Every structure is written in C-alpha cells, then in structure tokens.
Image (tube, rainbow, N blue to C red; front, side, top):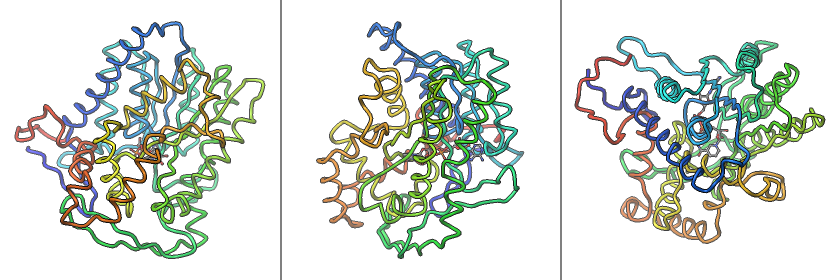
Length: 401
Ligand code: NAD
C-alpha cells in the first residue's frame, strides 16, 4: 500500500505511520542533542523535572513538552491523549503513531513512559494518572495541560459540550489562504451566541484543568513545590476579533482564572499554576482557523529571514531550559499578569510591524514572496507524517497498522 495525503478543505484525513514515527524520532534526537548542551553548560546541579505528567501528550505542544522532559532531561513521563486507532484500510490519527514511537524511543533509553489513550475529561483518566504516580513511587513535580479539543463530556452530568471558533458581538471577515492552492479568499464567521460561548469555555477553559489538579492533589501524588502549566496564545491585533476577543479567547481567560484558583489549592504544598503563552505554530487544526494560515505563513517568512523561527520543540526547549529550569528564578521572567511568555520573539515590535505591513500588501501574486506558504503547508503535512525527510513515500508501507 502506498500512502499519500488525503486533504479536504484544509483538513488532512489520514496519516503516514512511518512518517509520524520518524517525525517523533527527529524531535527526540534534537532534544537528546540538547541534553549534551545542558551537560556542557555544567547544568547537572540545576533543578530538573523528576516526574512529568502531560495531558494532551501525542501531538503539537504536548508532545514536544513530553519529548523535552524525557530526552533532554531524562525524566520519566506519563502521557494522556485521545487518538484514533488504525483499522485495516483506515489510518490512525497522527498522535496514535507518535505515541507508539515515543514509547519505543523512551523504552530504548530506559525511561518509564506509561501512555494512555483515553478521554482526559473523564474521571477515570485522572484516577489512572494518580495510580501511575503511585506505581512509579514518585509524585509529579510538573503537570502540563495541553489539550485542544472540539468536544467535552462533563464527567458528572454526561452533558456533551462543543467548542467553536467564532467572534463575539459582531461578524468577522478576514482574508484566509488555502495553503494547498495558494488561493486567498475572504472568510466570514458569524458571531457566537451565548450557548456557544459557554460551551467553548466548558471545553477549552480551565474547569477540567482544575479537576485534574484537585484530583492529583487529593490523591497525594503532587510533589512539594509542584508546578502545572496550561498553554495559551495571544497573537497580533488582526487576529483578536476571531481569537483573543472571540469564543476561544473567553476560554483562555477562564484558564487564567483556573491558574489563580489552582495556585490557591495547596499553599502548604507550594503548588503553583502558570499559563504559558506560546508562539503560533502549525498543528493539525491551524489551517482551518480564519486568518491564521495567512498570518502564520507571513510570520514564518519574517522570523526565518531573521533566523529566529521556532517550532514546537524549540519552544519547549526554551520553556524548560530558560524558564522552568533556568538559572534565573521563573518569577523574574513572568509578564505583569504572571504569565510565562514564549511568544516574545513573535510579538517583538519590529517582527509585528513587518508582518502587519506585509499582510496589508499580500495578494495571490506576491504570496510566495511575502509569506512562507510552502513552509506552512510542509509543517501541516509533517504533522500528519508526510514530507518528513528520510521517508520514501513511493515505497509500499504494508498497511496503516
Ligand atoms: P494539538 O491538536 O496538536 O494537540 C492536542 C492534544 O490534545 C493531542 O494530544 C490530543 O490527543 C489531545 N486531546 C484532545 N482531546 C482529548 C481528549 N478528550 N482526551 C485526551 N486527549 C485529548 O494542539 P496544540 O496546537 O499543540 O495545542 C495545545 C495547546 O497549546 C492548546 O491549549 C492551544 O491553544 C495551545 N497553543 C497552541 C498554539 C498553536 O499555534 N498551535 C499556540 C499557542 C498555544
């Protein structure tokens, strides 16, 4: 069987097993190379993660965080995600293959890595995480919450909530690019109603993060001084009507509320919750959010020209080595709202001015000069195991399994 990407409306419907595995291996290799750099810097005496739980561990920021914890810092990790298992003739989701590859690579290095394919919003997932810490005889000192989900079932009532990406108050119209055809068109989104806002906050807000941390705290599986992080995004003003000031922005505000609430749970334990505002990268859902493909492609072009481009793994490496386990106390690198900023390079004044100026001039004729649309498309395909260096895509792969 020869597997080619099946893309419809900027969504990739399949994944390449060997490509996803290789993509994970390449990230692990980069993280491992970084561990040598850490040693050379004489950082062996520095603080490091001892036992890391990642919720949303199979792709994007969660996977990169888990890879850095394991392969740069040698930490045992526990990962939760919800991925589609392959069936004969139908591919699994990318994270399914990434998890499998991660487990093989970690086992090779003797690193413990229990990995659960289960709905993280369920009570059962939280019980399993607590049990994994007890089995390991090691409490968690770092919990990373990196879920991106369109749907959540409330574990108590059984009600199903769905998240939407919509503006609030008025309709949004903005340019968007089809990264496969290079066509630019206007996309419109109607404003969300109150139910849609509430449901998005239920799914992508902080309630479930609080439930996780409450459960782990009550189960006694958090180490003294444990830290927990959830990821967020701010982005440029042109995206605010659809992002920061829209439904998803409401959910992100709720995460900030949850961070304050979690930090007040266990003052005796010193448990602290942080929001980390990360850079825009290409993950599986990026191509369907209006304006994002065009903005991110332009941003990539500008950041690559200035040699300050970063992907998920670069961001996770910087998070661990310069923020969480750096020489400077984390407190001194927080923004006035107490958040970790990994979007500092993206949001730099001169980068933003250049991106904004290009976005005003961009059209289908100059798209490739002003924006890195091919880089976006390639990252998007790589997130599904396609166009990964070293993989022979003309070769028979056996099957999706
Ligand atoms: P992603 O889609 O690559 O990863 C989402 C993860 O959540 C996957 O591991 C998936 O299996 C897991 N997941 C989803 N539903 C689940 C469920 N019900 N149970 C268990 N696992 C489930 O997403 P991402 O882009 O890495 O986003 C992660 C976080 O980072 C989000 O909070 C997002 O807002 C934030 N963030 C993303 C960007 C970006 O540009 N992509 C930028 C800044 C912040």
